[in-house]
Length: 196
Image (cartoon, rainbow, N blue to C red):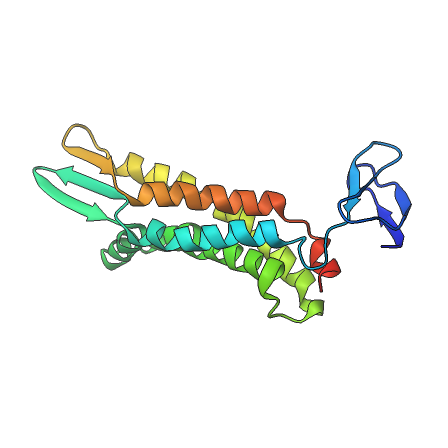
C-alpha cells in the first residue's frame, strides 16, 4: 500500500511504505500502529466472525424466557419480545416502545451493519461511509439494553410479594452483548475500503 495515511492518535501524516503480509507501519511520533498489511480479503474476518456469533445469539436472547416472575403464588415467564408485546398491549406504550427500540431494534441494526461492512458487501461502496456512521450511532444507543433490563427488574421487584429468577435467555443475552462489543472493538473502518 502506498500513499499517505494519518495517525489515529496524534494526526501526523505519513507516507506509507510497501508492507509485506503481517507487517505493521507505526507512527514516528507516538508509535501507534497506523496500518497492518493483511492478506487480501482477510482483514475483516475476525469482525465478521464475532458479529455472526452475536447475530446467532441474538435470537435466543430475545425469544427465550429471560425472567421467571413469581407473584402471589403465580409463575409467569417472560422473554424480551413477549414482555415488550405485553407492555404495549396493557397500555404502557412509551415503556414498550423504548424497550423495543433499545433492546431489540438498535442492537440488531448494529449487528447487521457490522456484518454488512465486514463480510456481506450488499451495499455499493459509496454507501459504506453512511452505513458506518449509522452503525456507530446505533451502537451507542444499543448499549442502553442492559440499563433498561436493570430498570425493568427494579420496577418488577416490589417488596417481598414479587420474586424473580433469571431465565436461560440471560446467558445468550450476555454472550450476545459481549460478542457485539468484541466485533465493534476488532472492527477497522479502513478495512472496508481496502477489501472493497
